[in-house]
Length: 396
Image 1 (cartoon, helix red, strand yellow):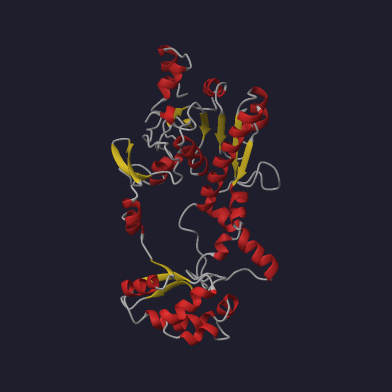
Image 2 (tube, one colour):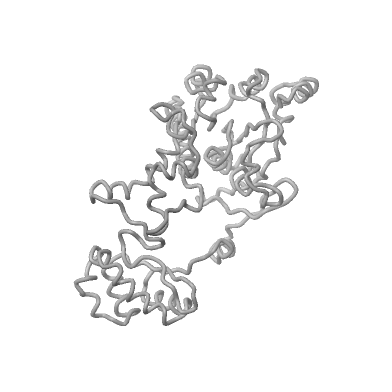
């Protein structure tokens, strides 16, 4: 890939990153052409490399969020390792880190120190609960944050809570770090001022909790857990067809409700039934409504139900498992898959979701641990003897 054609060509990002949130942010910067130098521990690297071994011996997490990066191993507890890092930071545009609470400051990599030494540098800190406040010293992993924001209390069935099936707090924080860095780069380009960026997992996911927060604050109770049913819209959820498959559909307005009654349920008189006349009425009488809908769905197989719903303009879908998603006809027809190299193999990966007209997608390899260490050290002016000494002492 010729990164010179990409929007962030010429931008250098140095990231002391691990797990999901920071690597997800920096991978998206790399997607746009930034040079991302990923600093890892000598030998073992980012611990996310060992979350699983399902992708040709590599972690599914790591393969997902670390393509198009360069891997540099450094022991940052060693002054020589920190010296190499500072050699990079002198000319870097962005520094991203999601180290444990207080670790960056102990290493001399806190925001205040970095902005003093490198006025053009944009430091980006990703923390659990913020860098100040009563929980600043707490570690935060994805599920802990899901619990603290109340998300887990909304997810699952009436009988049991559940975590979301993806690392939603990490992803939220990574997205805000990515957009925050882009904003800071734009501001520096237009004003000359480099603004540090800070994102916490807790506050990122708290933003995504906005609707249930307003509902609870002003309604007196939080939305109920209803499995695949929607807490404030009905009918909206899955129903079982005669062949045992599940069909999901949603009625968003009164026009769709009237169409569903006449064209699918075969009961046009329900349109004005006082129990179901408005969206709030249908939610209040959800059990009665679900019994009617479930009875209708039980008469036909899923394919027939979906065809009938589509014919009257009701949004609907089957419930895919992940294997079905991987073979989704939309992804295939729109050419969304590309091959990406991983050490020793090749995997399919989805293109970045934001298409920029005329801008090619960058889908470069996932690096092995320390794959680019020697090249980066040479770039910084280190001799063969110096590199060998650093390697012998475990600094790189």
